[in-house]
Picture 1: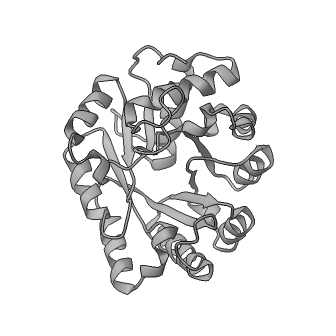
Picture 2: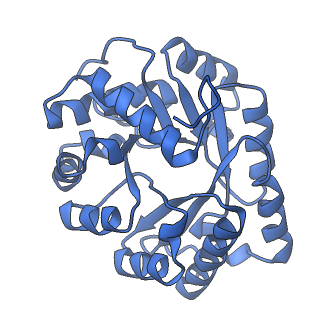
Length: 270
């Protein structure tokens, strides 16, 4: 698949711009995204202590916002000091969500009971702060959905990042009031269930992302990913839905603004 033509309509709802993979050329990566016409990038806390770096990066670029949270891989490190740091970072003017938070039963880098407890605590924090959540779930659908229901997460909403389920999982997430964000795997040959979910989901409930530096979309698979390639993901979603890439770009940018309550010119959320 060739890269779609440049248009100022695309947004990357999930990138990790503070990661070491970008240390050598971070400014150039951001410049390429801007030159490609991206309206927004949301850079996501990648590890414990990363929220402050995300805040500093976002403060220097008008089109970048950030999230603050502890990934399930690092749930084993959670304590009151870390929680206080996340809470403080989330009060920054450019913080738009708590995340990424959730459960990962594939790698199990933190004990599952600890993952569940920390996920619950961060949902409670998000509700107290009035922020949406960005959810990571891998091989943990039932526990993820149950915790979201228990903690009344529908009251704040949010996004299932790098959506990895099929139609049934999509239905469950949408029924809870959440949005689905599609990444590089929707372009992969083994991504048929994800593609079916992209067809199923209403266009106004979809976001697109890169999860940079990971999951570069076909035909760039295996390379370091970066935000400008969100256009490739949007083009794949467009092909699945039988509409133009620009229509997907515009709709997903609007959905991002709504999900994360990002103001646009005129002072109102998109």
